[in-house]
Image (cartoon, rainbow, N blue to C red):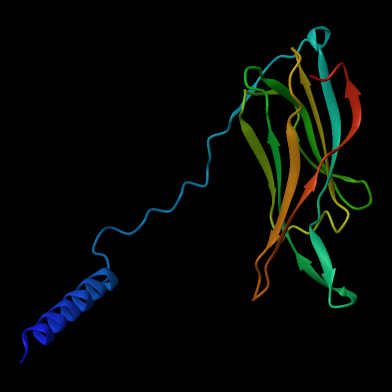
Length: 185
């Protein structure tokens, strides 16, 4: 057998051996499931309203379900995550209320009932499961926040997603300011 052919066969066998070794089952311990209890960046605070410099009340549309196939009888359930992100580099904001309403404006739940601090550049979120259709197609969150110093406005938005069957859909829904308190940075 010529030398070049032997070298080619040896290289080919080496590549096959490497490929097979990388495909073999791992013998390490199974991956641990992530802890469903997550650390929160929120800390309860006592709020002195006389020290509030600025704040907002914002409306965030949330879609628990959307219709498809030319009919309101066929709806796709969506999970939704409300995200509140403090964009200020040095100052905290205080979230005073997070309320979730259904299509008819009925309060479904109140996630924040007393003031909590969101530190600089921290974020928090509130989740609506896909099988929770209580909000309907016109659900929404009302978020109220204040600050004791002039800060940059937080980014508040909802992310909706569904990955059922062979379909996948995701989109965001930005907040709309309903009421402004004080001067914005």
